[in-house]
Image 1 (cartoon, rainbow, N blue to C red):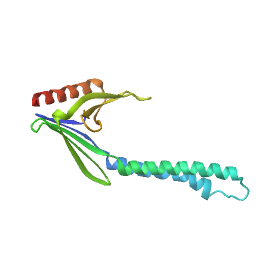
Image 2: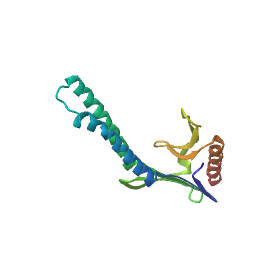
Image 3: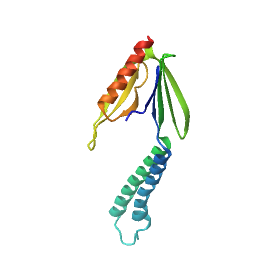
Image 4: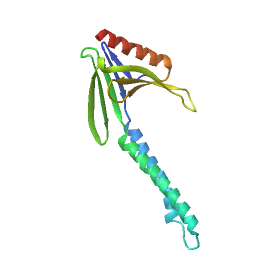
Length: 167
């Protein structure tokens, strides 16, 4: 499944985290809080050894760390749009999340050092693919979401053709 929108001389790849996913992560973040409640608050500590208290505290801190991580995913999940435009011969990358306004970076086609396919092999389920653009300066930018290598190769071929036609 390719999220690319294609118009003559233009490709747009969008990756967004939906509001439903954000709410789901926030709700899931509440579940690990049951661990410190059950181990530290609800438990009667009259005749319990110090070793058990140490174990319960370590496990509870781990559960709190999971909660913080899930809340951060809900708040900081990135929305990214990568737009290849033949008319202006540029690639515009815009990123945002709930706590950050839209940040845009423009790259001329000439600054693209490499376009390639990245394969993600999962332990369960089929592999997925995405494209990665490496500018001459800066970190690589991954975009697109493809369920088959053929779809990814077709998109990569179209993007390379777009960049070659613009030069």
